[in-house]
Length: 235
Image (cartoon, rainbow, N blue to C red; front, side, top):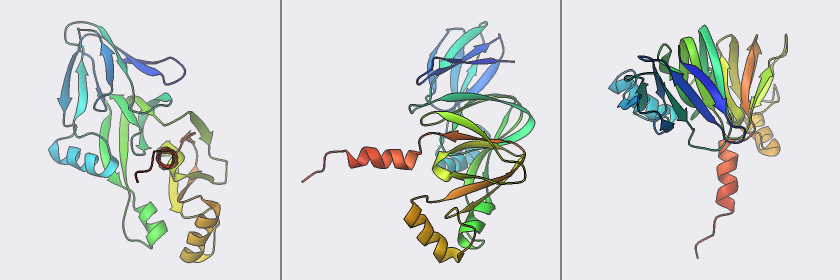
């Protein structure tokens, strides 16, 4: 099996050590450096249709990088396309859900798919619509990244963990997830909209069950809005 280690503290690399014949898959453009024993190609993971669906619904690349240590053992450095922390998650026959842009790399033993989570659409719009997320399942190592730092926060026993949707990175299938427009439990749809405007929360995700959620210290929409607000305005 490949070995994944985090190299550095601020904006780290993920280093992958591959024995001869071993392979991993990574987000397009993630390779920063590698030994010449490794052969890197582009691959439509899961086929053309699944790759198109993943690109259109989760924001991930159509072609993923496929790295194989063909000419002997080798080492490669992987880096996400945004500043922030990298984490390695060990899967043992379970499934993890990833938000947009969280996938960095994985051992090829893991299966990657795109799924529509109806609980989000149902919570917000009374059963219509949907929300697409990346699902990674099987046994092996998964590399995820986020804008800013990553914190692992457990769900309280018998209670709920409420997380702003922009800060969620990934969660295991041992958790039940639903969504709402505010942290308040009542008030109807209009009340939730008003509550969200007042609090500035937007969509929050609620988690129940046994396990922990990976949470990012920076939310991409807020970060993009902060940068845009400081860009020179054209006359």
